[in-house]
Length: 328
Image (cartoon, rainbow, N blue to C red; front, side, top):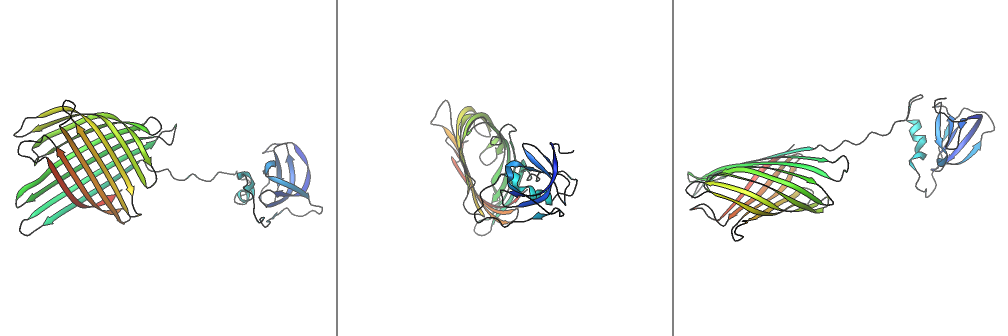
């Protein structure tokens, strides 16, 4: 016999299940764990004993059928095994019962592309072109689905002129890798390279490891705190180059304010190890408003501060941009 069990004397019965259903059929086998019925739609239907509330013999021989009973006024929660009637009805005769398909897994890769331009014509003419590409890879551990390995690539470029004088010429790309190691704790490594012609930085690069903590992990609000060490080099035009170690303290927040409105904010401060009075700071804040499907309108604020900039360059550089974002 395909399903096994001890042979039983053929007996026509109605099984009363704990979920309120009833099954009519012929008992073809029975053991200490289950009863096997032959019904009009399946030759061998195993029913766990834990799902059976009672049985009622059928005195006259009839074709086995299923009788649907009205559910009780307040049914108690039942184990998944009591859904055997619905599962059997959906299964063709002779076919094996199969579990429901698993929901699709989230894609590990995410990408977004922002493109924008600011134009102003009047007493002074200004043009600014801006682009930013973000690639994110996030994969849960096989051993613990609540822990993740992440990799973020961020590349931004902008160019602008005011009254035919260059007012923006900057490129910066960074790669940040982090991995969860404990309850809320993760380790990371950050590397970046770029230039800023207006701030007289011909080439700048940085690299450094650190440790972080997931302070908030709510569906509408996430916040991370980070601390580490950072090695930075700036090759400057018209000023001495700078090469030094810096401490790095950072925080980042993603807040879904409304279904269509999201705030993404990141702040970093780099005190110089040899002289804590010298530091650099970066603030990058973006409001994103979803327009349609994968299209969003973005307003970004980027503030760069350096207590020891190149000669003739202001310490603070504030940039405000608007752009359209395409999410892949």
